Amino acid sequence: MKLVFATNNTNKIKEVQALVPKHIELLSLADIGCTEDIPETAPTLSGNAKQKANYVKEKYGYDCFADDTGLEIEALQGAPGVYSARYAGASKDPDANMNKVLHELGDTPNRNAQFKTVIALILDGNTHVFTGICKGTITTARQGIEGFGYDPIFTPEGYSKTFAELTLSKKNEISHRGKAVALCIDFLTR
Ligand code: IMP
Figure (tube, rainbow, N blue to C red):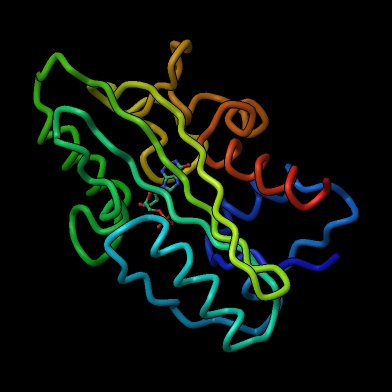
């Protein structure tokens, strides 16, 4: 089975590729010749995931899935949430985004946060939605160089290291995206 993962983020492709069973051939947007920036203008994670998956289905004809992820911080009333990519501006700069989070939180003792991933899968004309959550806390400074995005400032619950200090396979085992992808794969293989 060929399935398109509607993302241009090579880190996400790497993460998901490691989770997909051999009989599912994962194609990236580059593999199908889609190089444009797909619009993400919905006010919710599931709205954006559906928007991206629909775009690929309508324009390229492939069954596909798309994800949208947000970092929800308790002391910031759930921000940056659906605006995580552009939190510090249109350039989507991860360093600027992390600086803004650390600045906004200051020395607030409540560092509770969660990553949420919503996957929209379009298969045979139907849309299916899967959600994965990883709870944790925001550090006071960056730690680690692995991963991407907000990984250096997020410590998952039960761990003393940030996502950026964990291996890809450990992150996949416990992460928001890993959980959402596992639900999607369960559905595809049952
Ligand atoms: P999107 O799902 O690509 O729209 O991601 C929204 C924002 O969250 C971007 O700034 C990403 O870098 C960030 N992000 C998405 N997934 C992760 C993750 O697994 N770890 C850290 N940051 C992430």
